[in-house]
Image (tube, rainbow, N blue to C red; front, side, top):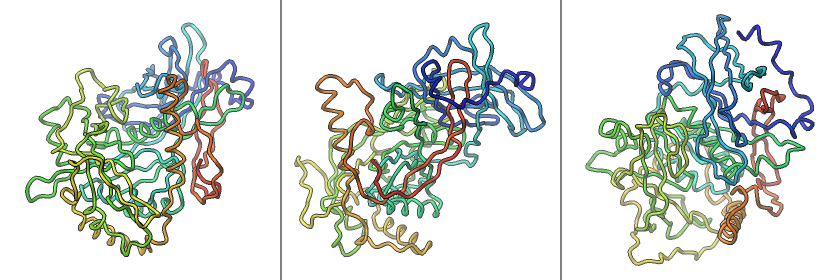
Length: 485
């Protein structure tokens, strides 16, 4: 019983530096509490997502104690699972700790996790529990984390295409973006089709032999995508995981406008064990990108002057979240049961359009396709007239002033991060990459650009077993004039 073991709950750590050499850090991404969980065979489940070093977790006992609103205390033994999404060269791996309890209609008041070795004393610490989303959705997009975003046009293209094909909610995990991008995100959030989610960053620790920010794949990409996955794990029928320049489109069949759900729902019956769907991507280029001297911002104009390629690039996924435990952006990694699988879908069902070349400061810049068999006019499969009407109606609904000529047309962050990725690829090709691939591994020139970025506060860490546990208390958005990188 928890009440009898509280005397063994370790005191909150005041001086972390002295203990780092002997205790491994665990960075808590989020703890969710599911009642009568669809994903966990109707049990109540407490799931904690963490970033942690590789360790023989199976040699330890994780004891979970929940206190219900009635005051009753229940105990279960938790299990730790590597979600299979972390490159071998990164020190911090995405794991989940699952604790299952009998179904209960009561709310959860407290949750403690204890860690001990065989025959050793159990040490406990309290974790903050969040309620996952409770509203049912047919199709959700967990957008890629926004580390340093300066392409406002890409946001509009992505969101209006998502709306056109019946997407219900997109989740935007923001770490840093220019103010114009943030204003657009807030507009779409006000319109009910987007949720702005503060991005996750592990706590910076003095005395640790490495920087946690440099030891997660592509700047916490997998941490934030799994935070979104588990938020909607029980309530979304389907989830996609696109970058902002990956726009999923549906080829309409007949008079009726097909939605994302219309295209994927038949697989629930025809392929009941299909947990993930591999969707091909094609490169798509605006023949003439947006310019400040364009008379109007019109999807109809830009999409009629488009080249889309015949060559497919790496596919992206759509998943059924209740069947998936760990998901990489190009491949499902860990399913909830052995019988679940991943299947490839025909491009008639859906295709990701990998959008390039949206903004330019040049009045003469024009994309010329390298091959003769590229196709013109993306309006063949995107109703640009409806997209224009939807966008303008949203501006009117919320009295939002939008003038594309006053928006920034330079993309400094895009260039800086692109240069960093080129360096990472060259290092890999030259000697095999020996460090975690992430934009934080590069050095950048100072940027005097007004941005909105996250500021996180953390609970005092606690010791449980051979670990120091670090957990966010809150994250807010602040304005900064020094850029994102």
